Image (tube, rainbow, N blue to C red; front, side, top):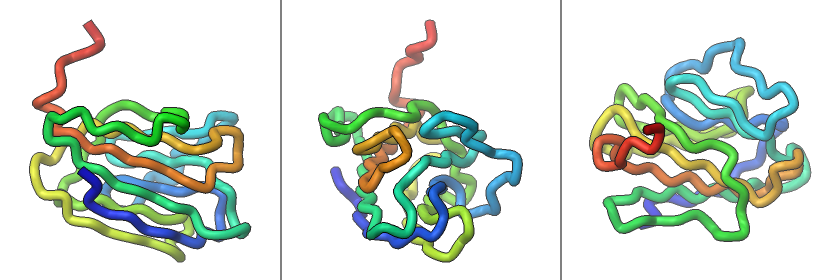
Length: 137
């Protein structure tokens, strides 16, 4: 179920999502379209060219999926200590915060319309990490 949608203008080509706490300074992308820490994911986006469309979904076990034409750039867990997720550019100039409730640890899937430096749309699906079977086995 979609729980939020926002169009953000970003000045920096890296968008961050995760805990509203300050993001670690050493979280860099290198040559990848996304990178993550325990509480944050950063994604490469098209900066200063227009609005970045972000859709936030919460999966309650129904199998909510991102846009099928998008590429998944992160599939892991995020720790949201205060049960809120923040989405915005890493400079902090554009920012959206949404209370998601539920647990503190979420499984997060992040997909983008173009993983090669020009993403203009990002889908985020949060699922209760306790309800997702361990796929690492």
